[in-house]
Length: 223
Image (cartoon, rainbow, N blue to C red; front, side, top):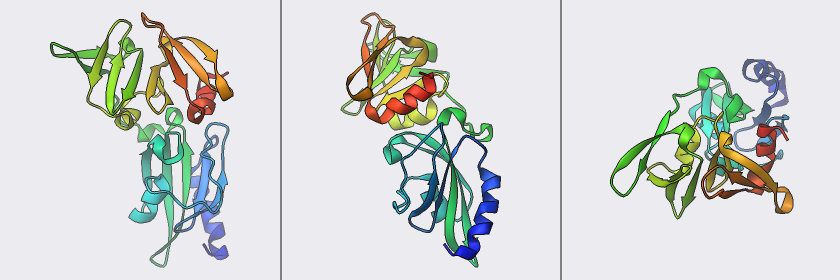
């Protein structure tokens, strides 16, 4: 990105970045600048290549402003990116991206959320209100919904659920688990600054919080 374009980039910041979100600036292929916030840190280092699937990557390729939910597989945590490419004389020179935790993403970007999920049991299918689901697990590509007393299969992948579940109720704490925050009974410290969540089901299941999600989990719950 040419130095003469820096003032133009700084002017663009005010259009897309409110306080409390992270900011990333890239040229056409790699990050040039990154400022994390207290809410979310993707651990971007200037010089890192822009990964496929990121909000920045989409905006660079589409040559237009993009609001995009990004799965945790890209940077380790899910986020909502609002990206604005800088196009100069018909060429994409770079991009600026505002990075929001999903629970604080712009209201205009909100999508309809599910109020229930369908669970498949031995005899058929059962609509399960979200408040009855204690946690969700995945094993060998099979998603299971766990209530206080039973478990049911569900068709959605964990990546799909990451975009569909309301983030004010469900939090992803591990690549294989979502938990209903209102169904956490106790938080146990575990190895290497991780945690085990004791859930309010009949078995008092302990769900792990992995290192990838530990920091954002603590920020979300405030401890």
